[in-house]
Each structure stands twice: as structure tokens, then as C-alpha cells.
Image (cartoon, rainbow, N blue to C red; front, top):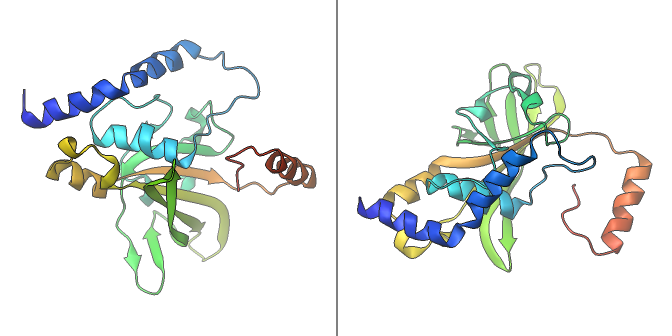
Length: 209
């Protein structure tokens, strides 16, 4: 057993609940109760999915897909129908971070258009600790027309990795991999806005933007 493997396994021992979650997800099958969606918080997506993938450990469930070059694809090239537990036109991926131009604005070229960054380096916290950051992109067609497609890109930071597991290889993977949430931003009805305002007054968290 390699030294690096033993370190990762040692970290795995403190995350035994992950395997249980994977089993539970598979047992659910098509019987997820009506009204339930897969909608992880940003910190959960980073810690329970992206970080687990970077460390070579089981992710919290197999709902998040692992696919190469996601950010270089047009939204309609992604099979979002496979995300049966997500909302319509929404999907989650772990992928390699795409090359981007960072002149006056940050853009990622796709097959027929490009993703343009609208918000960058938004810190993500968990219990007062920064666990990563979030960048938001808007998809533009070849003719420059803005669409309603949004890409949230999440990155982890080395500080959330146990010191004895933070090798040069893991550091490289932190720079290489990102978690992505791709969705079609629906226009909210007045009733939905009022409902979300009431939820916020009640003190609930994670209300979608």
C-alpha cells in the first residue's frame, strides 16, 4: 500500500457515513416522494462531492455525474434528462476546469457559443470556515445573444483537506477539478417570489436565487 493511499484511507475513516448515503440513494430508486429534489447547498457540493472525488473517495451519491469537458459544451449537448432527482433543465457534474480567456472579461468557449463570467470568487462558508468559492457564468449564443442558461462553478481550497492527506498530487487535483451546476433560469412568478419571502422571514436557509 502506498503512503498516499494510506493517508486517504485514514481520512476515509472519518467519513464512513458517505458509503451509507450511496447505498440509501440506490435503494430509493424511482420511489423518491413527490416534492423532493436533489438541491445540495454550495458547501455540501464542495465537501461531499468535489472533495470526495479529489481524494478518490466515494461521493455522497451518484446523482452528481463525472464527465470531461462539461464547460466546453453547449447546454443542449448535455443530457440533463438523466438527472431524474433534479429540477427540470438542471444538472450537476464533477469535471476538469476548462481553459478560459481572462482579458477584459472571463469567458469559456463552447461548441457554438461561450460562457461569460458574471460573478466571481464568491466565498462559500461552512460553520464560519471558508471551504471554497463560486463563480457564475451566463451562456451566450454564437450571435452574442444572452440566454437563460447559468453555470455555477465551485472550487475547493486546500485548507479543508487534512494536513496528512494534502500531498502535491492532491493540491494539483484541487486546481484541476471543479463541481458544476448547470441550469435554465426560470422566470419567477409573483406567487413564487411571495412564497420565498415568507420562507426567508421564517428563517429557512438555502433559498434559491
